[in-house]
Image 1: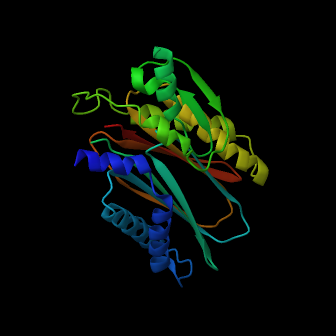
Image 2: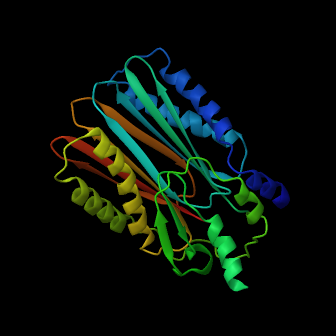
Image 3: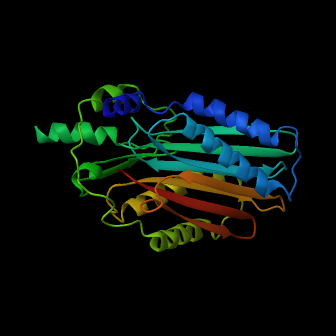
Length: 116
Length: 172
């Protein structure tokens, strides 16, 4: 068991897999919807919870942090940056940008390895 | 000989994202030296994997953190950094793009200076123009709530808003 887990950590975080998983979640929740102030709480909660559930199903020894920012599309600017202090060989991050006619969505996934 | 070992382990503890910094703190529990460089690394380096294979961690026999993450102090740090950097500023695209990166680097350096042992840090900064548009930021974390925590602060002035969040995850 211990050796199996170590093997997973040597490969590192698979950003592409996470990217696909989260993109599907966002498409499922926000696809075809317009920005709606009353539902936005529910949508961000579902995106984040579904992404987390799918990531956990991968069965890897990671702690996850999933952040979702949904902004109404307007002429106005928005910036985001992140800075991390961790072990780059085992931990990783993935950022997914999604947009439609009325809103922009940025989801960040951080995965921190657990050493068993 | 010990220096080479320290180099190898220090090398593997790098930062990703908007800034990178080299520190030998993690293994020996005290600051040896700290060097910051803003390099905007996007992809993890593949050669780190080979060098990491030689490092083995010994069992600490600790069940939890000896010192917990001080949320209130970090909230103050976030408030100070955001207020001092952005109080007088107007929203400008180039300025704010640079500001987000430097603010996240500054916050990370100050939180590291608290010397909370065995914690990994993630700092997120959002800056946007105040214009009546709506924004919602949500996050969910899968971690151990007894040892892991987060701190956040929102700053507003006449033309912009800034949100800074620090997540602290206990290592093992």
